[in-house]
View (cartoon, rainbow, N blue to C red):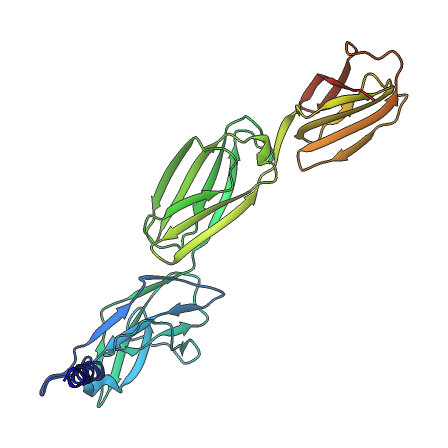
Length: 327
């Protein structure tokens, strides 16, 4: 008995799956178009448009036509190509009309879809998709006209979008900073044919921002975005790091001075009086280290070693601690 009930249930489920979207006698499907996005970004002069439609049986096998602006301007075979598989998932009653547009114009254009069948019959779907070529640009606008920023000094960064971006407010995301921006100012400029948008960021760079890659990304809706990048050049005063120190083993003195700054600072040792050799090496974009080893006589814990670091922005010095190693 249980086996018969299970078989009957499976048969009902099977028939329901086969007849998903089946019509009752005398009924027919309505016209309907499904576009997942209102704005589509171009990539390399092409645009991929996911699309699915329903139509009455009489029109279902009709010719699918994409047009630019209005039905009077249908796209030629050189401009459009069927691209099945873009629309997922599909409903059982739908047919796919996904295409890739080729040689897309730089200016924003509106595209539509229609079906043609029989003796000059056609249906124009009211839905439209806008294809845009959207470009972002990052500009630095420091208070000085130098391309080099100065650590600790406020500056503005501007993220502006090209006129070909859609006329809606995007979400701007900034990435790559080593400290928190102070202020954001948004502006929108309405023109006759397009809307311009920009976001201005007030920022105080830190030494670690030198050679940092800053990105501004504008997001419109779900899939459309534009981004731009710039690499910062941040000059900074010399600083001597606390990792600088000396060690004394018997009569052998070894000292290391680590300094950061941009341009990379020069390190000097007054104790050497230019009579001894020392080595200098670059540790990073902003850090340099200098090391020397020399034999000393009557050197005690009260003796001092000074490191001097300088670049064009200034000079700093530090008396280094001496670690006496028993040996």
